[in-house]
Amino acid sequence: MPAQEIQRPKKMRFSQEQAFIAALLFLVGWLNYIDRQVLSVLAPILKQEIGLTQTQYAWAVNSFLLAYAFMYFGSGLVLDRWGSRFGLAFFVGAWSFASGLHAAVTGFVGLVVFRFLLGLTEPGGWTGAIKTISERYQPVQRGLAAGIFSSGSAVATLVAPPLVVFLSLRYGWRNAFLIPSVAGLLWIPLWLYLTKRPGEGQNPPPAAARPSLWETMFLLRDKRVLAYVLARFFGDSSGYFFIFWIPQYLASVKNFSFTMIGTLAWIPFLANDIGPLTGGYLSGRLIQAGYAPLLARKIMMTIAACIVAAGALAQSTTETWAVLLALSISTFGVGVWAGNLHALPADAFADRNVASAYGLAGSAGAVGGILFNTLAGHFSAQSNYGAVFGVLLLLEPLGVAALWLWLREPQQKTEL
View 1: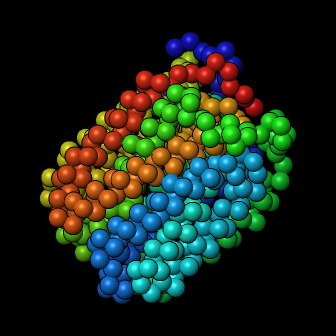
View 2: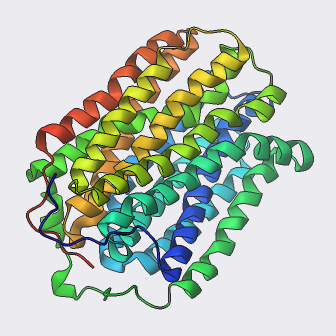
C-alpha cells in the first residue's frame, strides 16, 4: 500500500517521556483488570462464604457489565472535556474505592451493588488511556503503545489467579479485594507528577474545539463509527469470557481444584499478555512498510480472529496440558485483537471525538458482553460449554467483517 498523505516517522522508538507515559498506562491496564478479576478467582470461595450460586454469579457479572455499558460512553464524554490527565486520575481513584468496598460484602445484594459501582468507574481507565495515546503518540507508535497498555490488563489476568489465591489464603478473601484497591490510589500522585508537562505539540483544546453533546450523540451517523461499534459489540465478548469464566470453566468442566487454578490458570493469561505486544508491534511494522494504519490494524485483527477460532475448536481435549494449550491459543488471539482494536480509534477518528467514539463502542461491547455472558451462564449451568465455544467462534469474525465493510482510511486526521 502506498503511504498516506501524512508523513509518518520511520521508527517506533519512544522518547523518554513517552516511555514513562507508556509505563503508567501499563499500570492502568494492570490495576483495572486486577480489580475486576478478583471476583472471578474468589467465586468458589464466595459460594461457601455467602452462598453465591452459579446464576447469582452471572447476575453479579451482568450488573458490572450493565454499568460498564452505560458509563463507557459517559466516560468518553468526560475525557474529551476534562482531558486525559485529570480525567484518568479521577477514574482510577473512583474505581479503586469501588473495588475496596467489595471487602465489606455480606451477601448477594451487596455484591451486585458493589459490582455495579465498579462497572460505573472502570471504563474511564480505557477511554483515558486511548485519549492519552491519541494525544501523545504518532500513528506508527500507537499500535505498540496500545499493546503496552493492553498488555497491562493481560499481565493482570496472568498474575491474578496466583496473586488472589495467595492473598486470600494468607490474609483472608476480604483483603484480597482491599489490597489491590490501595495500589490504585497510590498510582494517582505518580501520574499527576509525571504528566505535568503536555506532550510535544499537545495543547489543551479550547472550549470551541470540544465536541458538543449534540454532535457526540449523533456519532453513529458515521458508518466508520458504526463499524467500530459493531467490532466492539461482537469482539469484546471473547475477552470478557476468558476474564470471567476461565476459572469457573476449569473447575466445573476440566475438574481443576482451587489450588490447580492458583498454580496453572495463569498460563493462558501469559499467552494473552504476549498477544497485544505482538499484534501492536506487527501492525506498526506493516505501517513502516507503507501500509495505511487502518489496513494494518484490520489485517492483524483478521489473523487474530482465526487464532481465537483455532483454540476454541480444540476444547474437547481432556489432558491438562492440552486444555491449557488450547486456551492459550485463543487467549493469544484475543491479545493480538486487543492490541490493534484499542489503537484503531486514534487512527480513524478526529482527535476531538476519539474518547467519545471509543466510549460509545465500548458501551456496545459491554452490551454484547451482557448478552454473551447471559448465554454463558445459561449453558454453563447445564455444563454445556460446547455451545459457549460454538458462539465464541463467530464473535470476532463478525466484528472484523464490519471493519472491512465500512471502516476506510480518513481523508484527514489531525496529527501531533
